[in-house]
Image (cartoon, rainbow, N blue to C red; front, side, top):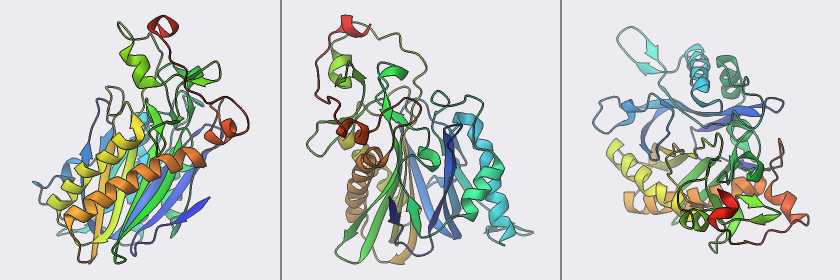
Length: 331
C-alpha cells in the first residue's frame, strides 16, 4: 500500500534491492527544517547526528537517510548529498551551500546477501524518486527488515516500513515513518503478539521467554534496530524537537517488547517545518501515537521474504497462539 506524507516541504523516496534483500529510504527537506534526534539501545549506527544536538549551533537539516547494510550502508549518504547539491540545496556557508544529511542504519545482512548494501548511487536514486506518497511494507529500508529474533534466523518474522499520521485539533500534522527491524516482538493494540519469535508454528513470547532463562540463548547474529522519522508542520526549536524525539520512544515501548536492547540501535529523528503554531506537549504525545501505529502498520504491510513469514502469511492459516516456553526449550 501507499500513504501520503501530508506535510508541505517534505517528500520520501525508496531504493529497493529485492534480490539482495536490502534497501534505503530518504526523507527530503530541501529547503531545510529544524531537527533533532534521540538514540536508544546498545547498537546504533549513525552519521551526522551530533549536529542535531540542541547544544550545537547548526540550525537546519536537508535530509535523513534510513538504510540497510549496517555501517556499510552509511556511505550511501553521499548520494543524497550529491542530489541536493546538484539542485542547489544546502546549508549556506561563506563559500558554498553544503547539504546536511543525517543517516541511521539497520542490520539486515543476514536475510539476503551479506555483500548487498546500499551505495551512493542507490541513495541518489531514492532521493530522485521522492514524492508526496510513499510505498509501505517490504520496500526501501524495510526490504530486509525482520522482527522477533530471540531464537535466531529460523524463528523470526518479516518487518518492514510504514507511515502513520496523527492530526492535532484538525490543524497540526504529525507523521511517523518507521523501519521495524527489532529483536523483540511487535505487539498489537491489545498488547498481544502481532509478529515475533516463533517455534513450531506458535509465538514464543520473547519477553516471557527471556525472563524464564538462567543465562542467555546462544543465538547467532541478531543485530537489529528500529528507526523512525517523526515529521510535523509545527513550529519547534531544536530543544523542543529533542523533547519530541524522547517522547516518541514511548511509541516504541508500546509496540515492541523487549525494546532498546543491547543489539538494537533504536533511533528517532524529528523534523519540524515550522509552518504552523504548535505545542510541544501535544506534538510529543501525537508523535508517540504515530510511531506506535507505524510500527504495527509496518509488519501488517510487509510481505514474506527470505524465509521470514509475514503477518499476512500467518493470516493464511498458520497457528499464531502464544505458547509459553521454558529455558530448556531455547538454550
